[in-house]
Image 1 (cartoon, rainbow, N blue to C red):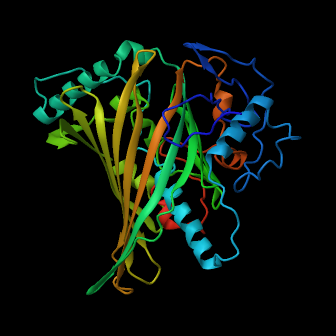
Image 2 (cartoon, rainbow, N blue to C red):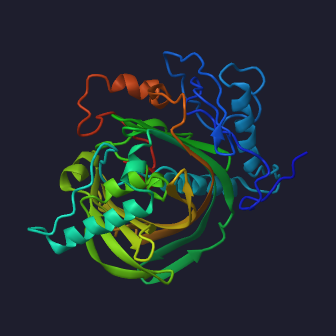
Image 3 (tube, rainbow, N blue to C red):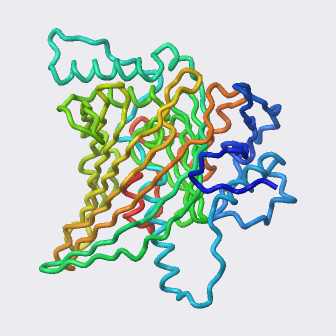
Length: 442
């Protein structure tokens, strides 16, 4: 019997297999052996995407008889469940504490689960040529830094040869601090420090298609993009679409997709230098344009700004730190506006070449969610969350992966037919959703 290892154990005696991007589609199950792939032949592709399960899958309920899972898929599913801590029921625990934990997990998944980048980029876009004449120094410096980053992470020719890819990793998250402030007083709650462990699988395909499954604390978040529509499915909201233009997954920018990262900062400006963990870095700043911010706003919710800072090492040329800041204004009916500001700081570590492309194999993020502006209640709240991740397996140009693997849920697919998606899908989202877990994604 295999010996179980801790979440961040360096020993990898157990090989992990991935689950296909869509349950009804099993194009390939990968296992890496000495740099080669062993794949399963393509199976029949269903014409209709089956309904997405509401809430986490029951433990083992359909693992034996359901036809939606192949034998190899069930092995991956069982492996994923083994990574999740299963707490035994406790008769002494109160319903209020368990409710708080569920709310805490929702906040973690809403903020750190599947956030998006600030602007639309495409894998087909080309980086601007380095130009000094009639170009502001901030812009030309940023172009030079991106040229160095592209070369350091494998080079443009190698990046262009990647048609699709697959990543499997493990994560640990914790809501470390909840702080409430009011006029003349401040309180801090550090009691909710329960660590949640899980894992994720990310698939991507050129151009602009991606799909991710993330399992954490017994709940599952699904998110994807077919090149025209970005969507997410959570147990508490069901399937819903992102407002605004198609944007990449922020997790892919965390050292997993150098080509998309370079394209994301193509219109950025170099604003200076700073030391990150003792390493001198150039700072590139990217702001979402007003048209994108307007397209992402809906009803009483207005996205005021979304800014991304990239810190590129002067020594290696690689991206070592990513800072993401977003401000949203919520206008209450008959009341004052409330502001939500989310800041995510990600530190990228352990860069290693995979088939010539240099990928960050571990990292950590610290997210701060600040609520302020409601003077009638007199309180401001601040929540700090942390995440650490390790990449176990990554592959490029996977045989058998097709566009059918990135089909959105049928509820969203049918509603979006005939709509102009150039400025984002005009799909009604659930009004009962929590603002704290929605504004980071819309």
